[in-house]
Image (cartoon, rainbow, N blue to C red; front, side, top):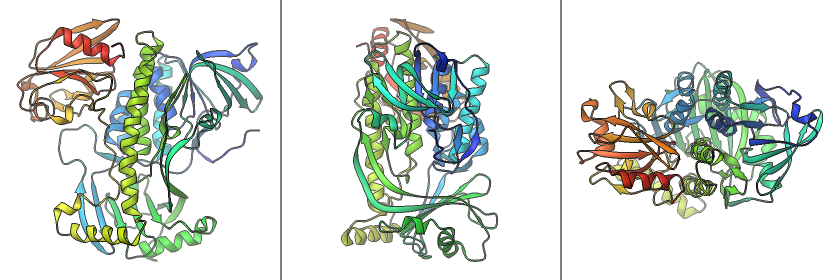
Length: 541
């Protein structure tokens, strides 16, 4: 039997009987995505836009209620922009760049996440996850209207998975009973409790922290808080050992209270007890409505491998981090961005299947970076001993007046793109004086140009970005084409192109991957070197 695990915010893909259910033998699909959350929808959108048929299976008929992930980074918005829905997210979201850190009733310091100009998107927006998912779904519908081969089946629960080497066998349960499917590739995007992971006998490795956090989404219009991220250590209002406040669209505010490990969760979730904490923080005269609430525990864990034969894991099904730092959904979007172009090349026969191993290498590198930062934040927010608590508070006291101590304060290092330093797809980094931020393996930073922004002009394939350097308009190597985007310093009215891509060099040639990471860079065009780097980036060398 199919039973709903949660209530829906938006019912978008109601159950309909599919022809596969009446087929005499299991129908094979090129790609099946398990789970229609934000990562599953983004995965379908990425592949479908490449013309690759993709089927998404989910055990519900739409998007669940509750804000859950709310903080989406510039990098996630840039990825969504390539898919066609970044602007809609930006228009709906609440933009913020400033964060403030408090200890008791004192402001310790504040920070600005995007101190430089010249980016299309802000450092972060706050947007409830149901809206983020709905914008992805609406873009899928727009792409389907243009012929993208994407199908979503609601109330189709994957109950069994068998990897047969060159394909995967699936048993699917519906309201009309079970049926069987086959997939050349199965992408597991089914969340932190991933049933698919369990079906394959796989698990997480890492830490579960012994502390609990109460989330409350409240609607209020009378409060005078600015659109900033406010974090309290040991807040004066005593509603928790720490508290986080964020504004969301529609006059909704997210409040996180650190409430301890040995708590009665059922008791804490009673509305009157949630209100007791909120009233102490906001004041009894502030009117608000509780929209949604939940309790979570910090977990910093990942699978040992993300790629198992013809099954690939992405998002929370592959890795978990604590929510402070906004590294969960944002990391999942980077998983999709990394996997999509590689799987596309493999399916089209333009790259060897071993290219998918580089997804495992690169995104484990990203997960480990996120887990390291998330673990450090958790240890600072929730000190585990009297000595570590004394040290934490001493750092907060010093940070109030001494700038050097502020780098030691950790209320959640916020998500930034991962740089794939020293990994297997990287080509040479031979740009003397080139900026460190655009070294080989880095995500390309945006730049304002006279006719728009750089990332919009890079497209979705391999690109040869030249700055005051000669090169052919395109180059083809073993079936892979890289197109040239020529720029010159005269196209750099703000100096951002020089600062972000040239440094002290007078010219530059960049080979840029479809996910807009730097594959290689040189001072001048070298055809042999570029061809070799292109082969390396496709896993052919």
